[in-house]
Image 1 (cartoon, one colour):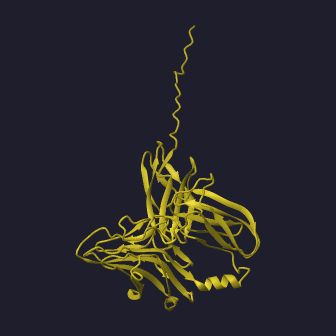
Image 2 (cartoon, rainbow, N blue to C red):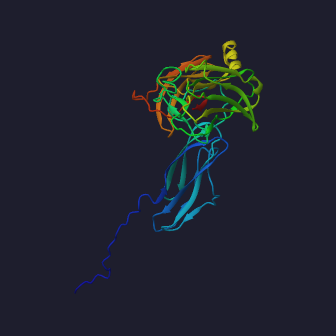
Length: 390
């Protein structure tokens, strides 16, 4: 008798799921630098279901819902059908200055979790911490400063090749300064404005503006005027020409006490007559000094609060000093980040006493290499305090 099997031949095949089952594009987002409390930056993300079954997202969560959010309201579970794409926007709206980072977790109960790394920098264009120093030595035009001109521009220079302007910066350290270009010739009388970012002088009793200027000696003299702008009202506070016909750097100081408790924009206006050769107008090392803060620091040995202070000088060429107040003895470290949010140097961790402490950063990264010119952020971290500044 022949036995016949009634079970047909069966071939089993294994088809692995694509990796990843949910394709998120992009999965790392750098929002760049955004004005604090004034701007928001949305970036579109797509989530594609790469498998042949419905994909259910049960939650999208972040540990920082203050500075980052999702633009569209989502009803969970969010179902993405096979091979389809869901589009949304992630939004960065910084509420404070400095570096912000978070990881958004897209949770899919069946297929695990998918991270999206978000980085952004908050920047407040209104200056409220003093002393403020702008030396232009980074060879980068200051953020939030603007130029309004008909013919010439304020340009960054470190020497003058036409003998009508400064032969170096005001401090003689081969740094940069701002100058009105004197190489073009026309028959026009030109007023060239450079506007500062806003300065909040609230609570400052004796603010003082200080800067160095150079006006070259030539056939037609040029002039530098300094104006204040408060609530769109322009007031002239200085009219400067060359000193006794000699081209040289001159330091100039003027009190801004009448603008205490106000918000002020400075207007540096170069006036040149281009009908013939004229002297170049140059400016360097613009500072606003808070005398009240200096007096208070000398009188109070033990700070009343823990706080991260401004670094000095800023900008800097070789090294800068980072100061911070400590109310009680504690251990902390200073982290240096580049504008992309990448950690380039950690200083500490060290113990400090209750006083105004200082740490010097020599402008080098963790490998001992000099960092390139640009914007950097420093963050103070302790067990109970974290704050970042530019």
